[in-house]
Image (cartoon, rainbow, N blue to C red; front, side):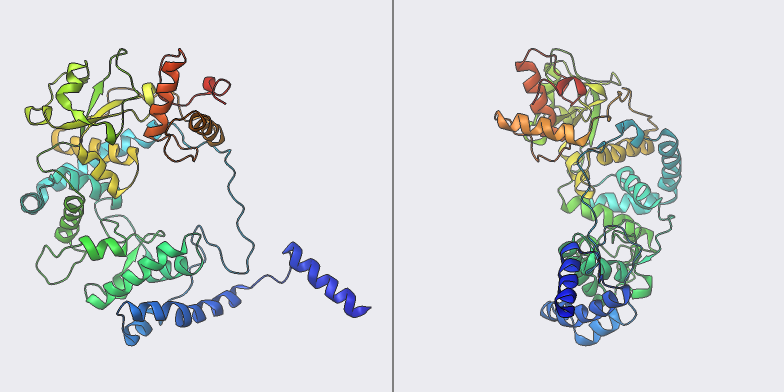
Length: 412
């Protein structure tokens, strides 16, 4: 009878998951076994020597304070419900105080590093103001505190994060970095997400795009300004930056022109947009060299915010961080540094209050009737925005190209 009761208790504990959870000490022990039995064979296959591997992990410890961890044997984090607001108003992203401060510092540094920036521009074809804008946004022009030992961060995330395969690849790349001799492990510091140094490169990006621009024989994105700035320029150049072209222009779009024409797959010569009545809000004409080149409509808040005609360089900026708002931030900051310009002219409207679950429902409804909304994830990307605009027009609603509460009842 006692044996039966004990077996029943074990069965119940296993079913509920309430008992016998692993301790941190258990996980630490599993981590050491994982390093030797799982990671080492992959590192050896990738060309890492046993001595290098041992040295790299001799003092590495799990970093328990990182976000997005899923330690083995611990209760799994609850899935986030699709009911939170996806986005506050986009306007909150463009803090005028912050942009003014970054622009002032950027103009000062443009003068201080003028000769280096000119040489970088000649080498890679990327304007200095864009490089400075990324430098400022990513690390406060190298002044931000970036404290985390990267090997600890990457090893922790490769072993027990919610995206282990991504960080496993980056951990192997970090081993190659150490083997290259470009950086000592003690100096290899970065963010909690594994991005390193002044340009905030992941290890795989470092291996592909970091350059030694000061000629000291090492690619140093932690303490060398020339290496850091040139590495950003090389990254953009390799991603397809078009020399001589702008990133984009804020424009006004007449009510007679559909907002459902945005996206990189709907590019047309900028002169064609002009013929449709689209004009720069500054009142200036588009530069002559831009008029015959392709441009794309961008309405990140639909009719409820600033509108743009962007160039392929805008999408190169998104390679650095896959966000429309990030690329717009960099473009606006670069313009402020280069020409002393200010905030976007149009106001960001009162958007950003929709629940993600509501946007998801709209996407599913649009998909069901044949629209291509891109990812059905509750996030209103350009395919969702233009699909909404097309649907609105076909149903007798003035197109706004953005989800709002008034559409919920009609779009099910």
